[in-house]
Image (cartoon, rainbow, N blue to C red):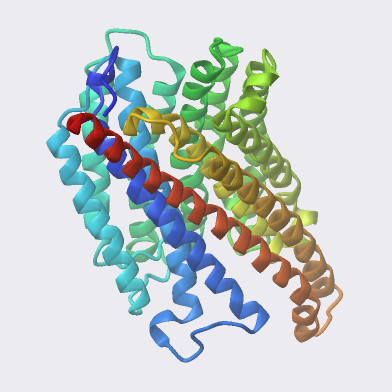
Length: 460
């Protein structure tokens, strides 16, 4: 392995490497499950009579694995790298980190098996089986303690860089969000009250866990890769406080035109538009930092993933500002527009930022350059073209479906009209899956090429 330099000794590189490997493997599972689920829409589902792999269960595996298998693992791995670097303090315990790693991923595998076995919970984005929910919550708290008490609390004597602010917020919010979404609707608030809580969970999982960690990653990488300071520290703090203030209130826009109180719906519309202050400060800060030397963006694969991710972030939030209005909701509610929007933000933005960080970490984790630059290029272009085509396609499908429903067309006619769009969605999914396979192969080959190099050095 590459000799440790500077403050590398603060980071448990084997633990970070384990998180990266397993998260990339999970990403392949996520895309494969999503692609398999899409086949039912074009009458090509391969397991029509196999209950264990019925479409509804595969869909739950797809959504749950996005949040808890792929993103949670890669984010915790990245946090365990960048937070000790920024605070100059290691995590509380490397051994405790390994314990959390194995326990949490055993729970992830258990959740997949139980969901496929028919034990999913009837809560949107909270489908993890009820028997596992308490253990997952405890595992997340353990992860939080390891980073929060170890690095952030012990490093409090020095001013925090803005990335630490975002990570700190995510660590405090995430356990609360998980408990709120998986326990309150199930056991405390029935009916429309529970639906309101569920709507908050759906959005706050993205806004109070995925978003702050994703922005922290982007703000860490940019100055390092550009070799220039972040364009505006003030803008980064405005974005942080805007996220904290607006995001928890905008969640009910998933339930516009529903029986929940109208004042809640109106408040969510206002907050949804207000949260764009956050988005525009982040996107402007990223682009203004890159604008200091665009040639580096062209040459560096991590910067290109960051750039496309920022563009996706901008587009998704412009979409959001449009579709949270009551008039547009009449058209796009329950349509494929929403599906495209969700894919663009979770894959096109935050997964792209995770890819950017992984490519940056590869030389540090394996002591060698990425095995194949051309494979990295294929990964970038297949992922980019796949998600762009998918989002445009599903936006168009949503508009077709919504206008036909509003015109009271027979439902089967809307299904027939949607079929061409569903074919395109599947082809774009094939492109994304191919990119993920190439990414995993490149990562594995990098690992083995380094082992071979080390073996030759020992022999010599």
